[in-house]
Image 1 (spheres, rainbow, N blue to C red):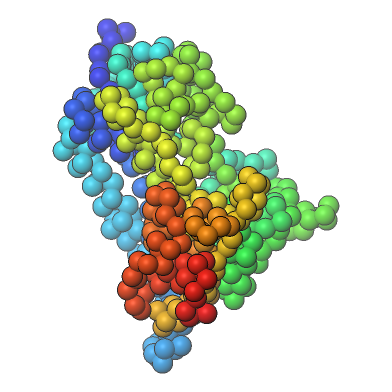
Image 2: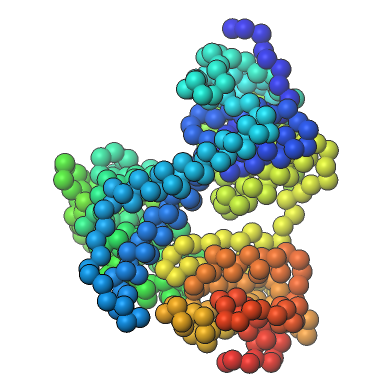
Length: 474
């Protein structure tokens, strides 16, 4: 083995956390090396957040074309060439975005080594495999001695007994890259990913069955929000089976048969594919953490302080491998914090609330405390709600379902503690509410902010009017 190469700031992983950390660290004057065993952009850009939204959008377009008669538009029955849909998703969306990230890394003079990093100590690691020539070359066994390290290795899908990922039993990556639109599609797990892709394939023409182990899909959202999504699922013909235990999958070349049990009674469903989306596991088990003094907590998550610093002062961890919601935008924030901390900046992961979004039909979004969470903390709150049915823009889009809800302190100040949106554009609307929650604004601040008309943003102002006791359109 050759002598160790000395590097300044090394980052393991080039997903949302890793590449943002690399760019910010370079902007702050650090010499940066990124080690990535897969594709730049990580799960999010390649097989997660971004391609799933592309597929969801394609489903919406197809469904809208089928339902155009609502607006008096008559066309021939639309058809879909799914191979072209997949080609568009890959070339026009995924490849474009990942190419953009590579360009930014190059612009900031970040060295990229394609390989798998394994820690040997608190200051050294080995690159144990290498990749294509377009990346900086590295022989197996290359040893790097680093001043500072940011670990951003992300997570992977959880595999459950009886459902090994092979053939027609697939994870979310397989669900995004199916060669055809399945006639029958079984989704095990009704969380964010399962719900989103179930809706996408239902819009594309699949008959979808969701098998969920708890008593409701989307358990992280309020039940009245989920009720709006379930209503739309029923219209699309999606079957939702809750409190169900997935037992096994048996497959041949043409189909897969899923066995599940409800209250001890077993049933089977025959489908073209079965996608398992029951959660993700932190990628910390093969990093060699046992060779360091890094403390690891429950579920393989690395313990960190407010700057992302581990129990080893020169090693940081961000994203899915640390406690908190496993969300790309949280990783973005943590990446900038860690890079700033290395540069001696007074950064901190001191947010009040991290927004969460599910791109269901309709979309759901939440930030800060819900009413039940506030109650659990012993905080007395009031809620103010305004329906999209009272919003001209939503009605003109033929998307009147859903509402905006504000959770405020139960006093004359009406300080905003949280907010929830279910309805058209929820994924975009939550940004304003996230700003309000994290900035310590109250309902009057929002009510006195002029929102353009007619837009989907108005229900936020209308809900604020409700909160302060002066509702206009309800």
